Length: 439
Image 1 (cartoon, rainbow, N blue to C red):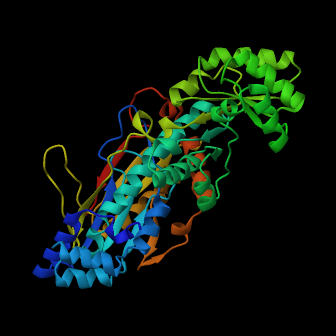
Image 2: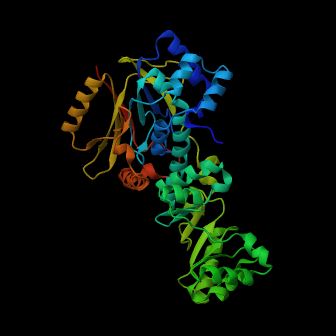
Image 3: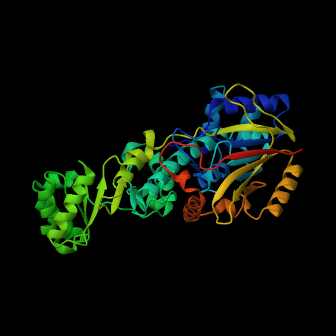
């Protein structure tokens, strides 16, 4: 049996809760912010992903009776903390960048307000979701950019944890992928699914033509046939023989994909399969996809680089206390400095719609609100980014955005970035961030 959401946390969250309940600071009104101090190496923007899953986790943050007993038996919580956790319900506020927005170093992508006791226990689960999903979405968005409008299938399930695979498929779809191979993701999130056969199906039948005919008989000529089990040239000939000119697609999963795609296109056309599409897969990342731009490839399949390794480096998001009872607090340790006080984010655009700057306003709430109102009135090219997601423990309409809403938002937001901000090469963040402190 899997753990409840309330157990998806680190021990020190519970020990801090116990101590705060004992010394009387548990009811202090606190503001925590989620932000990245820097972007991963080579990245020019981050993507906010996982917000909906975070809000689900906050709403369902519970421990059951057996879990609570385990916490007590192992000395994690005392009697007061056990009673608090047993009755936990989040009644605070959450603001943040809508899912599908882009972010930059120090962007306040999520702000959680409430008592110390209610907010401190959320840290680990909030960060585990956002760090994972944002990493997947940012890498996947780069692949979508590199694909230049050609669809990409997400197929990374076998390279990650079984539950992470579902979240990864969701984040990749948000980023613009066309479909996923993961059936659980399709069922849970309404993502289109795709997939036909692996090399094992060809090997099972002993000869390629028999395997292809079996697949065509069951799924029709519009299916996709995997042609590189033995010899690709013969595989394409067998695929055409099995399905005829109505063959939907062939897939190539190994070798020099650019060269093989050109050869395959020429052979298919010569056989009369001019409408048959070419799908390529095999450890593709954004750089490999960009390298195939001039090849006659119709669809990409990407797996490992979507879910692990260099394709999905974490942005190192942190959850830091910035305000206690209206008083700004800040960490000053070297290399881990935080900016105290709650914050509001605006983005500035040219008249053409191109974004040019992120503006983060810090200071007391009333002063922030006045500054935001003045800035928006003075410059029609500015818009506020953060929105209320939970108010008084109740989820807002913005906090209930659908996956398709988030997908559309990211697509539209990326169109506003300057072209150099979408480059795959190393460089500065797509937008500079300017801090404004008000009193």
